[in-house]
Image (tube, rainbow, N blue to C red):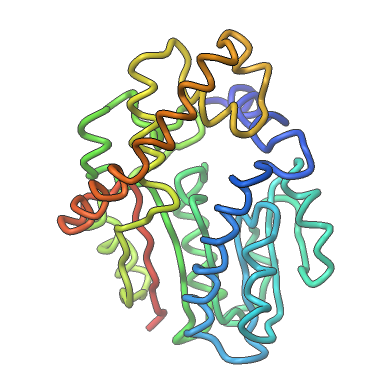
Length: 274
């Protein structure tokens, strides 16, 4: 996609127009998993560590890290409502824009995180070049991406939630991605395929995509994007919500099974720089 199409794809509706991208129970649900990710990363950190979250969103993941230690927090987020939310957190040194080679000194960062950001990058190789340069020896890289080799991807093809055209530009199988990271000097410490924050909803929304003219209607409705969902009645949207709630336990179980075969819809890695 060209720059004009990408600009439209990342308008205010993408980031959510309200105080938070999601509100109410959905935001609390997401925040619970932010704290769990922060706890996992903190186990690899010592007090005073310099942490960089690329695509930091509203900054709450970085804020959650402070529950587990004293760290120097840095966030990078593109201009928009998410960056405005992150700017409210005074503990974060926030850059609005994209990561550049001059932003951090060579081998100066203890930990870097990218949660569902890598697939959005227009220049992923350039970003990996910078990351491998600025991270310290034995530094930690925590990254999550969609799994193009997942059962969901192969089952739903163009209807798959995590395809997310035109925003998602690059996809890797876990095998290919780990081999790529090895060439940059990163060794794998942890690999997680059972991700209840993302994968069960991915199944629900992908199924709904097979029956609706528009993609991701339920997802956009949960963000409060009424303009996008205006073609659907409150009754229809209510049925979609109930479908999600009723089937959630089932799809948590199916995700557990998929994860045993490393075929979960998304995957999370923790690497260490050698």
